[in-house]
Image (cartoon, rainbow, N blue to C red; front, side, top):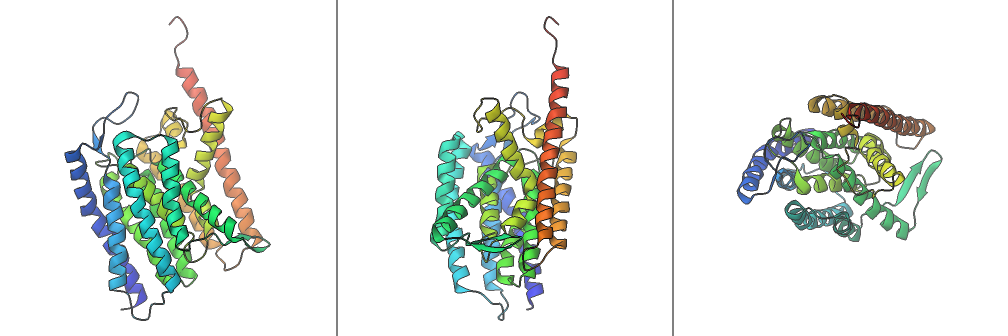
Amino acid sequence: MTIELWLLLVLVVAAGSAVPLVVVAESLGRRLGLVDLPRRGEVQRHSVPRTGGYGVWCAFWLTILVSFIIAPPDLERLSADNWRLVGVLLGAIALLPLAAVDDLRRLGPGPQIVGQAVAATIPVLFGLRMEEIATPWGIVGLPDALAIGFAILWIVSMINAINLIDSMDGLAGGITSVASLVLFVRTLWFGQASIAVLPLALCGASFGFLVRNWHPSRVFLGSSGALFLGYMLGVITLVGGAKIGTAFLVLAVPILDVAWVAYRRVSQGRSPFRGGDAEHLPHRLRLLGMSDPAIVLSLYGVCAAIGAAVLFMHSTAPTIEKAYLGAVVVLGVLALLAVVARVSTRKSVAKRPLAGD
């Protein structure tokens, strides 16, 4: 079997297994009462199971198992990467009880962060590190203490970026599919076929989930899915060499949206962790009159366009052009967030009834 055929089969297994596994998870969610009920002021009109993430979790790891079984004999695998993968699996398992409790009781931000940090620490104990940072002036190595701390911080940050963007049918799963595909291509271009299978499996599992999650959704990711997708995107960028810049740029919209909303809440004297204020970009676009599918497809397009630009500028060494691209993306996304916030706020104020009306 050629490596190309092997990768194609991995994608087919991931997407093909995700659909029935998500359906099973959806059915179990209804039986166990793990459903999201419609709440006042929200678009949701019917109860939806929030257990789809368990199906995605199972589809991903089933695919990884199959990939080992059918791997071409000439595929190069590093023992250190296999050991790190064991840590990644154990960390993913550690997320499951945290997600289950959150789905049942809606944990506060404190317990969630602690649980996420514990899960992120497990693969680090198995050797996962942020050992270096690429700059336009070269590769900067990090001492072990910083390499460990930054790795944990990065994984937790990615978990929350995906968790907080998971607010609309098809959004988190689709953005994860786009980001995973870009990471797969870059990893393959670096000649790391055994590592490239990870983002490819995540892409396929996320894409298969969209069959049941596209608007109007029949199942939600829930905490199990949102935490897992962010966790995997975080660790995939670190396994086999850091591709943090790629992930940051492709996911610039959800990452900077989280930072922007936190800034606005703090500047208004509120907790950055307290939601319910329709501050995030998807909610503000909805206030401007866009439909949910239009919002989701637009954000897919932004992430895909940035990903295409990153791939177009691919090289094995950092360049000043990549720094320019990063600056343009960051400034462009921040400008988008600022404009949408201003326009949607004005529209919201204009709709409020005057005193005495």
